[in-house]
Image 1: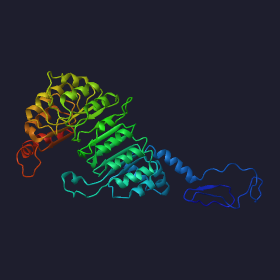
Image 2: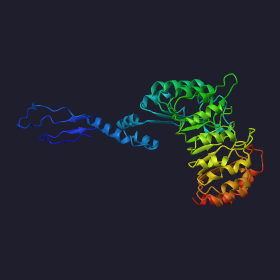
Image 3: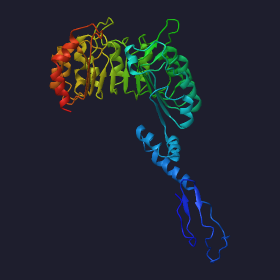
Image 4: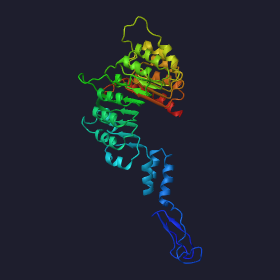
Length: 422
């Protein structure tokens, strides 16, 4: 705000709102004359609002919370501009909240984009098939506005193979793709990502529906670069129903020394899992695939030793089509586990107790209601640091009666004790 000064002073004051320099027209020069000083002048200093924006940009770079950034952008126009220029992560909670063109015109330096589409109740088949949430308009705008894009996270979006091809061809430095509960794409799109994105670090397909047609199925795992080491750190494809080329997968794992997270689909057998674990003892997160014997072998490998070699393993999931005789194989890693997902494993209370008694560091546990109250009591007695417990029904149909009600009625006190500790 402009300040008022007596006409006899020679003070100049910056006007932050208008970016002007206020100076009294009657101020005197050094000789005492009222004429304006015409001696040598120095280089003009930048406007105060430019200085303010430069300072703001340097400060806002350290502001990572979306909520705080949104609040900062509402202060004034200069803060609005500075916040947009310094934002590198763009989060769109509803793909219909604004147009892609408006988002890209405001934020011009984005490196990571997250877009959510359908509401959560779409997971329970409560939405029409062709409801919308198409990613194609976003893919077109992002490819034109952000050729330097590195990360893309999509949730409940309809993604086509052409969208994935556009991503692979438009972003030379692209290295992270996460598709959660998405649909509409197939193995040809995955093949484009694998072959074109040479710097890819993360490829995660979580509970997505991958369309597979016999005449269009592609061996997408073989499309990863065959020469030299890869940059892969996380590979999750447990929702892919079609079999994968295991020889290509084994070679890919062997060429990925930085691989920390690997989640396999049900086509990977225990024998194949053993071979992969020997190739990647550095894993911290493992999805086991089927966890059952579907191959005729003369002698079973030592699965327990393979698990014991993975000393950094803290998260274990998978266990599709589980064979309980293989459960002792995971005992060596249970002591370090912080997350255990049995939501696909139809284990009973005795089988769970044999595993859970070793899991003293467990913080996250997902199980089916087949464990009954006896299983929950074992969890309460062993897992003192448990922070998240989810119990899913074996049969989610509404007319089903049995284990679901038994767990929540008989085991209510046990669960309450777990919550009371925290």
